[in-house]
Image (cartoon, rainbow, N blue to C red; front, side, top):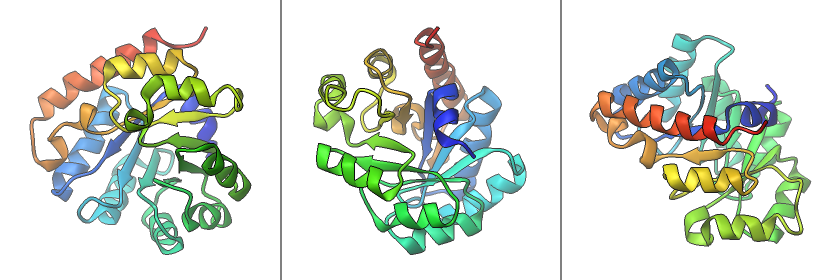
Length: 211
């Protein structure tokens, strides 16, 4: 898949992490029903590989379903086997190079200019600015875009609806959103509330869509 094209088209990456595998799967399927089709299932969640495999079966081969929190080459291989079509790392890790070897695009976690250059050398397709909120928020993104004006940044960490709009206006190619979108749905919580939050974030993304 062309991850960068998907990020540019959808501009919203949902991050699902939960302790209840069945609820996590329901969360993934509910997001897709609401129109959020670029989804990452974090490997730090319970039975995450099984969730990815079951979601792949339910959604079919063309769904943009990724694995997050890929820390190692073994994580990358396991995610690929489970059916992930892209990988997301929290940092510059062995998962980047292994993902490329497997033919999977990678959204690589970075925070500093040094991280950015290392991730690009390893073949990252896009750059996950993490933890964006703690690093300085939209202002930090603007600072990074000074020396790196054309690079595809995806801020992740503390991205609520207001921050999502600010990041997108500030030049982010997309935003990654976990708990402000998912809430407790992946723990067995209220799916109705998840649907409402999904619509809110989609409204933000559409309002900030580039002409």
